[in-house]
Length: 394
Image (cartoon, rainbow, N blue to C red; front, side, top):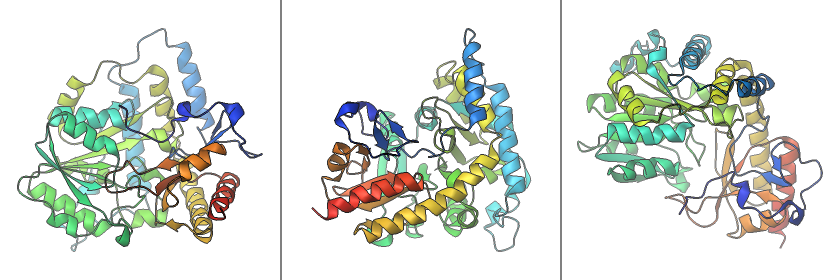
């Protein structure tokens, strides 16, 4: 049985059964307004689209199994992001955790990057290659963490994030680490809560994991949606990778560059032996030629990502306010989606009206009445709020 995910438009009724509102454009598929998948509402950048189309003509050949051109482009992207960041963590300062000082001095090398058919493939490859015995997870979180670890015999411990604390990860998570823990997996920002890990907590966590030789997996699939102010409150684990073998950073282009159908994600790690073991468990040619070409171009689209982060924050704040005014409890988020509570039949009601939202009841740590919606354009968000307001009037 498949685990439910967002974006599964293929299980929806036929287009003729929907009455989608006028003006639905981006995100609409067959009359469906899809708010269940956390994809950039701006869609795929045109140059990325063109690169994928050109690569189709070359697809009579096998793709590069080593993704050499792509990994070089990704290494340059990481270097530029670190150099141009206006909110780089104070890893040089005296008050910083000792294990982190000077960590941002070295650039990411292409040899420290591994490419996958989406971040999900790399999660499974990492579990297969590392084979942790006991892992600690903060829940609710992306289900594939548990699925991948359990598939390879790992014993799981759950640390429950609490709604009364707005699902914020605090220092008590550090107390949950013990001598038996050999792997920690966290989202920054987390899915489905949208919360980031505060800088102080992240620094202490990295230090603790380094001291205890615990592999810290940071899923930064939604990191590019953080605006400048939010990035100041945290930092990317990639800045620590060059001097820390106990960190594995996951990134995804699926969300920020609107390419879920092409699929692409990558990992960054300073442990060469671990990366080699992962390559051994990945199938050859796991990233198609169109996906490699599109991702290589996407790696250069930094202005697109920056503008998206700005627009996302503006639209998210307006959407959260309107949902709260409509009578829903909305939890804080720094990502491109919102977690909120509503009537248990809300998904079915919305689907009958042509809107697809994410029922989060199957996330460990949540239950019936929790839902997640992607932040889209103001026009689309207003249409959703109008519909959800009708629910409150029933």
